Amino acid sequence: GNTFAALVDEWLQHQVDRLEPATWQRTRDRLAFVCKHIGRTPVADLEAGDFLPPLKATEARGRVDTAHRMRSECSRVMR
Image 1: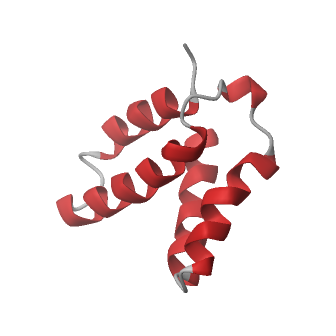
Image 2 (image 1 turned 60 degrees about the vertical axis):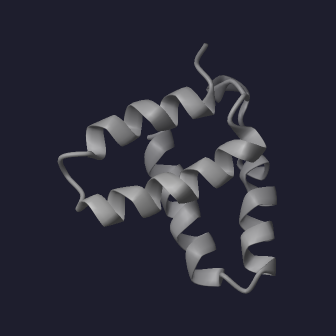
Image 3 (image 1 turned 180 degrees about the vertical axis):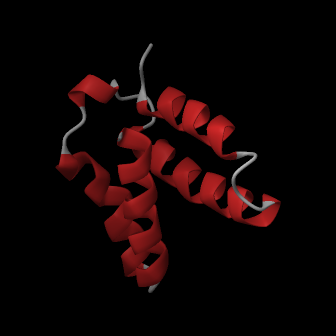
């Protein structure tokens, strides 16, 4: 199916040659955390609010900068 996790996998494959390995791994790890929350959701069913729980959970751990990166990466995946 066309789930968010499938879209993330496809997007990451396109980034392998564009990002430094360490950057690619950190990006993959952040998106994997988001996928724990919404990975099985069909892309067509996703709404902006669906992304909030993983972002809020990250912010609650004091990782505001990381949450901003996650939001930006999710936005790029969805384009």
